[in-house]
Length: 93
Image (tube, rainbow, N blue to C red; front, side):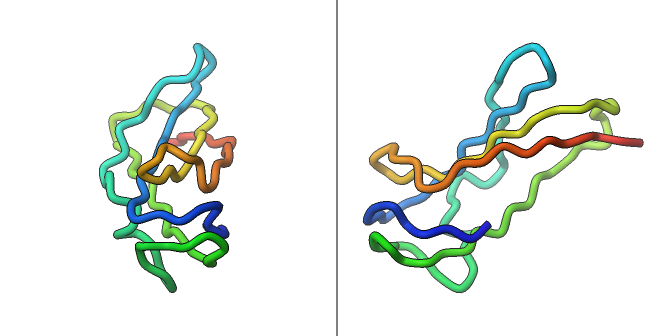
């Protein structure tokens, strides 16, 4: 995921929610430090810096086949959203 930093930041964390038709719920993303998943850049970032986040969503084999939406965002230490998007997904066998 390529993005431009909306503001200066020292830290960056992922915010993930899923919707399987019953409303949005938080999804426990395994790596809370999004700075560790940046490529071609690193924290701290300054406003206007170009950054690339390597998104890797773990899918457990225990998940049933289902269509869902995933809202993924990156948030700085001031709780300011730096990038946010929604993916339509399908878990299949």
